[in-house]
Image (cartoon, rainbow, N blue to C red):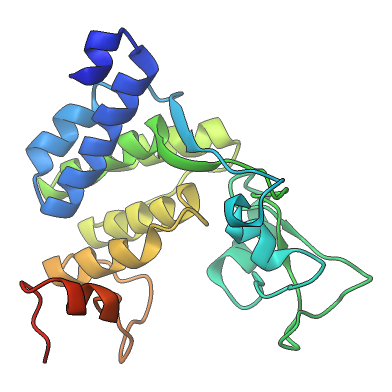
Length: 230
């Protein structure tokens, strides 16, 4: 509403897309799909970072920078083999002969999606909106419609289509595609949490014995009388 009054079309689309993502988290799939349909596929709204102030660095890049940290590696993840096989531009990584291992001694496969301290980070995109629409279709049992959306995004990225003979396989395709499209944007843990909570088919990560959410911080517990202190 505020963006409309200001005449700021980009901000209005960002707000609609953000509401679509929020409605996904709330399980409001009709509302999420309706909002998503209003956002063009090519739309992108990013969080700005800065290469000047440490507190404003792109933290994904900085935690993975050659100097001083090298704390993040693509090694032994799904994306290691996936990018090596497909060269999907959404999940890029490389190696550095000067530093074959990271600070923890593991092989250092360097993400290059965030290439600088000042690289912006996607908050919402039209491509994410298409995946929201695809998931809404899957939840309604339309595997073919969902897969068509997934494969349209893959074609735009220059990689081959996915196939799915069953609803379960279509769910696997959708879950993988969200991981690829939103890679290193801070979404995966919540996706896994809601999929497990909803009992959706097509498991892609083994979360046995692993937490799918963060506990409420001690500061919030101490400050908020509505939070259980036990």
